[in-house]
Image 1 (cartoon, rainbow, N blue to C red):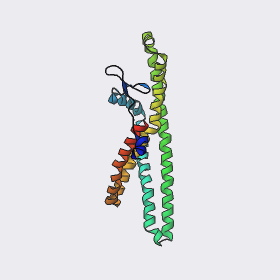
Image 2 (image 1 turned 180 degrees about the horizontal axis):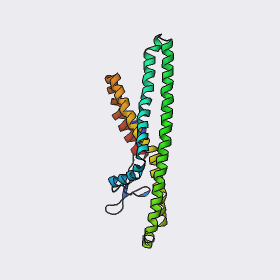
Image 3 (image 1 turned 180 degrees about the vertical axis):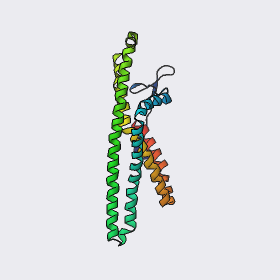
Image 4 (image 1 turned 90 degrees about the vertical axis):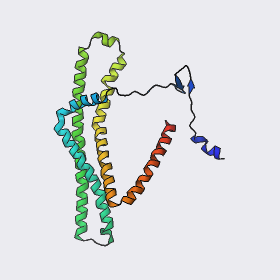
Length: 220
């Protein structure tokens, strides 16, 4: 009975060796993962494009900092209301609290909207300059360069890679920065309110990571 229960969770290894040093799976040859050859150089070149909009970029990062702080302030105010105002204290203080809470969420929404608009402007201006420089660079390359490469490879560099940079600058970069600030702020507030409950909460994190890793290996 126990064997029948664990049968769906087994992870069979569908690997057959064909030749020395070659491993093939059910869908064909297993290709090594592509890795960036020069991370620092790539980031440096992207920053050279972003540096022309440095002032607006710093303003966006400041907006992200404010938005993360306000997103933490809202739940904290609600917790204070649950601890105090729901016990019977009300009147004018309760009205002031509701107005303050509404202003916090309205200001957070406005800041988030502005940071997204400004970051999209920065990303589109940066991508436009990249496309222009790339197109100009192609005009200076010799004919032998195009003879040695397939058209699909060149088109991939012109379209797919630039689109990946555009999507990263539009959303991913801001989301990563905002998530880091929110996580640090959340942990700080949790430790300030109750270190014991914070410790109990983080005990579950390693178990969740192990479970996700176990599931990911099988769903992959």
